[in-house]
Image 1 (tube, rainbow, N blue to C red):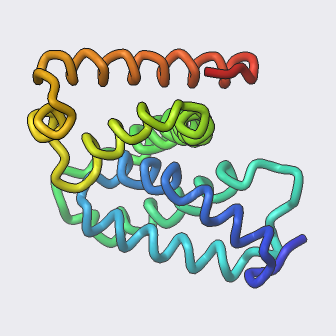
Image 2: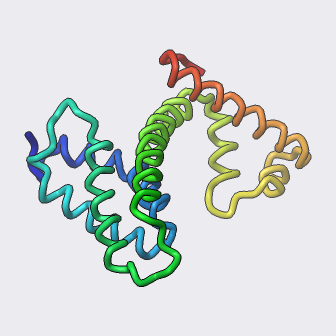
Amino acid sequence: MMDGTSEEFITHLTVAQPSLWAYVFSLLPDHGAAQDVMQETNLTLWRKAADFQPGTSFLSWACQVAYFHVLSHRRRVRRDRLVFGDDVLAYLAERQAERAAELGDRLTALRGCLEKLPQPSRRILEERYGPGGSVKELAETDGRSVAAVSQVLYRIREKLLNCIETTRTAGGAL
């Protein structure tokens, strides 16, 4: 058992945030409502940290807590005519919990694969996908054509995709 102040719990909670957000947002596409539910979910997870059983899936537990907060939110806005029935929500929640776990695995694999990329490839990705980055600016900076930079980016993304798939299936390398 953990408490809300243990490093292990904080690590689990931090690592789960992107997948948990994807899960909640898939069930509540209203950004504001999803943020409110995420905040409520995080508070509940923190308060109930001692209920988490180490060795089990933290993300599954967190998604279950989030699901109940989504249901609670839906009850509060039941007056809205565009709300799915609880059976549809339960189906979507189950599918999204599976996808959230997969997303977390893919994100972990991506981080590892990015670390394995040669420095020049990482630099190109950072410049392209960093704030204000564009293929045109990157081409001008590197003295290449836009087409050449696009091709380089395509090859890097392809390597990353292959690495992610290999890592997820066999723990492979780039």
